[in-house]
Length: 71
Image (cartoon, rainbow, N blue to C red):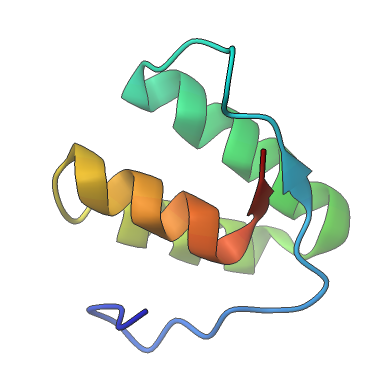
């Protein structure tokens, strides 16, 4: 995926359950942030959040699925 910023996807990708949960953008952002902060530092989590909110809802989902193992 080509991000608009210099964001580099880090391994390991944390697991985030998207299917069957609230599909509200803020809810997705919160789940992704919590998962990223468990595996990586807060700076990375904030960079991913900035990227997720830089576009439309589809962009948010693409970034979430690229930076996390979404199921």
